[in-house]
Image (cartoon, rainbow, N blue to C red; front, side, top):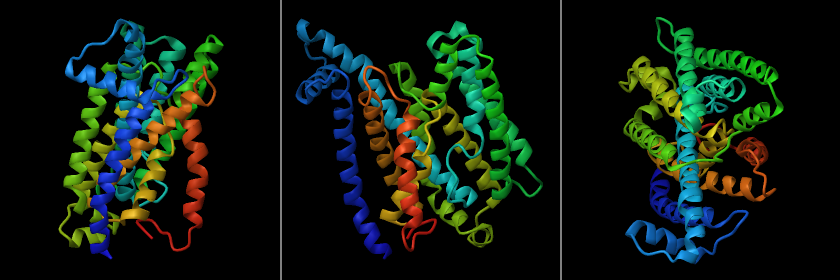
Length: 348
């Protein structure tokens, strides 16, 4: 069975790379104002090679290069990052319901972002105020969860999940209080829209840091894929395989918390991606993290690109929050997974 799955992973990766490339082009072309695919490819080629753009096409070129392309690429980065973090956290805490937000990091980030929207904090940072506040409050939430969950025996899965869940409720209460006390309705609406996830107003400036963090984090997790395999089988088994469980779980906590904080800061809290995609990928390639961590980011990137396309096109000129669409897709998908005969955490 393992040999068969290894043999079919490489063609799957190639297919997903092609799908991702096509999804990027489609994500740029589609929107309230559609642009022909051929023209999009021409604009992208001209931008990369320094080609000439006709004056009559300048408006469409700016839409492609300055507005849609950074948004689509960030959607791919966020989707890939959330999928990878979901895989790592589910292995770290050995919980099939774990996702990037189970540690309370997302709820902590929401406090800072909503404080900006409702109280005007960090106003001097302009368009980066909400992202900066979200990231700083995510760091604070990470520290609180770590200090509360830590014991002499290290970070145990149960304490991590319980502490993160409890802290998340506290942060959510504070967030709702800020929304309730908002001085005007538009501030409350902006806060709620961010809480459900959005890529509106994304610029090129938001992309490099998020992409670098996801790339470094994914590389680290891939380098430790065998250790993740051991952790997913239980602490006793991992110890017999020579894994320092306490140190490994601590490092995973730092890596996943840092990735989650950055991703939430640039996109808001996009639910279900980190919960659903790891399970779907395991159904196809099995539970070996050496394969899962290669396939999951590609699948997650393409998935969130199309979610963002739907968010822009379902009710133009208004945009839907990403979390609304991911929940609409994720709930029935997850119910199907749970009803599927023979499905268990880690594979089928």
